Length: 394
Ligand SMILES: [Zn+2]
Image (cartoon, rainbow, N blue to C red; front, side):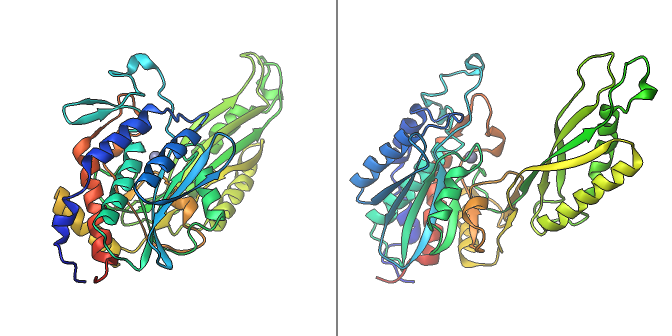
């Protein structure tokens, strides 16, 4: 690859002001989910991106929730950059040091809901595109930004775009969720399941006449960890389970006849969903043999776990730039949380990376903030890696 200017000189020309301005504006627009209204953010990005010379197209999920696609270039294949437009709710305002929907700047930080997760990331990606476009870097690819609606509640926007064929020509996907500028190449897949336990009610003074569904649920909980597969992922460790909800019982003096337990399994890549379903079914049979309740289960929600090889050019270049700009080791990381990648990628196996400014520990917290320098550095890392991997001779 021969580009007249050194790539480091190019990425240093990133428009920091643009990234900061977009982040502030997007945070101020309020896209808390629920209700996840974000059509006004999509509209705003459409106006801004048209001014930058990009093509735009809105993909509505409904009247209030809109996805947006922004692109430039005329290659047959695509490099897809993505970020979600909704945020989690701000919660109790009295816990916030600054108004969460104002993006207050203090000591090099921006405070506000979505500064990290991930309106700052959306602004970062527009900053990357603006740089590649302004510097007239030539690619065989079209550069595409996918702004998604409704990530925080079910990833419906990303699934919608996937169905519309947005990923059909993608050669890679980069998502700017918070990684503190590390390069994430694997993520766990949520497998949410409800364990239903049915017993028999009786007067609380005669428990021997009934079958206690809460006690039955306890027996079930004790066995849940046994179905966690032995396999370990080099970046993610083992599959985990969290018991998030348990509900049962009406009154202290009644033997409860019903109880349910909501279990949040996080499967690692390589754990086959069908095989895991079978393990869960077998467990139901086993429990019914061990305790006289009726056990059944219901799958509430599943998203696949994902994994990309680290020895491919885009990942190697992202690692190189993360090392160069943020001094991070040349080692990728795995993410415990799921991203829109899980909706956008399957059934194809598209190389992907998660890399963004802000600490993962900030996700969904009060007083969410991002170091402005990290947003800018994220843009430099991504732009540098894209130029090194896909840029072509003029
Ligand atoms: Zn997010």
